[in-house]
Amino acid sequence: MIRLLILDVDGCMTEGKIIYTNSGDELKNFNVKDGFAIKAWIKMGHHVAIITGRRSEIVEYRAKELDIHHFHQGVKDKRAVAQQLCAELGFDPSEVAAIGDDLNDYRLLQWVGSAYTPADGSEYLKPISHVLERCGGDACVREMIEKVIRKNGEEEKFLSFWV
Image (cartoon, rainbow, N blue to C red; front, side):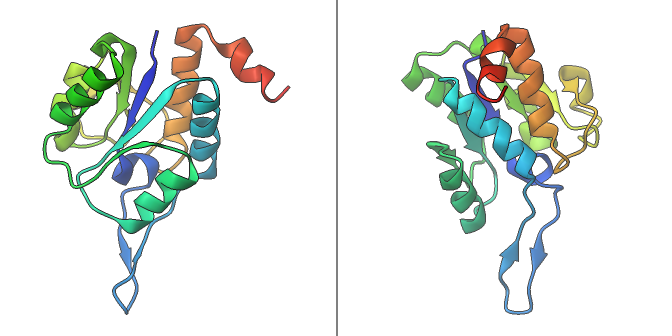
């Protein structure tokens, strides 16, 4: 059973664009459908981690808004951070699903039990991942979560929150 989701941000939770204003402020566009599914996953008693290579106050704000307590940014070796987190939580890699879209996610996706990449993810990730139908920023995280819920056999629990 998957108990921990590890999320990349740029290219997964967002479409991968970084927009700057004239004053140098950074803007990102998050999909509310991803947020809805992330909150439901946590409500089901599971864990979520964001492990991202960049640093961004916007991403920190989004993580707090979604009650994501495992938040790591500016990470060079995502697999090492995931291994440390799993050791702390007592999880085996087989209990972890991760989503990533580019080469800095490769080693992490090789290590986890269930690897996912958006439709527009790097071609190098597709042979080692479940390729999603949606692109980054277009609710691909939601698509991944729904697939994991089905794989876990938790559809009834998930739906009971809403119907």
